[in-house]
Amino acid sequence: MSNIQGCSPLRLLPALFVLLVLAAFNAVPVISLAQEPGTTGDPIVSKSYLDQFFRFRSVVIPKGDTVQLTPGALVVMRSGKLKIRAPRGKSLIDLTDGKELAADALLPAFHLVLVPETPGLLLEAQSMSLVLAMGLHPER
Image (cartoon, rainbow, N blue to C red):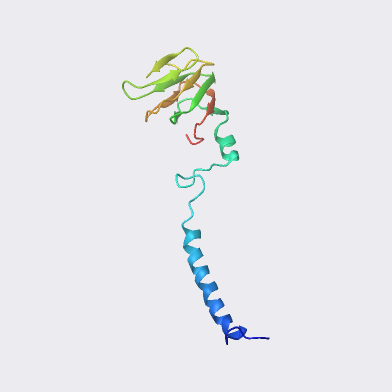
């Protein structure tokens, strides 16, 4: 084997090893700083999450129970009686009739109702009720 400018190949191995170790240590912060998928830092969301979240679910609400409504949720009451509990001056939006549903009103059956961005909106079951809901968290 010929030496390149007086260096043997064995003398280059420690320098190569040091370079590889330094490169590995520099890669660790890059990996650890990667954003969690689905957060504001990495907004890509999986299709399975969207399919799970944006679909109508049947929800049974026993008499006397209340359900917290999340902003942007869509609700269709299939059966029963649900009373709207809302802060003063706040309401739900009945997309079927194109009007607002004020607090203490009963939710109309088979109407598509949109929940606006208002905190504290609740549905209180006056009787056993069945609703179809999209975007509603399963916890009650």
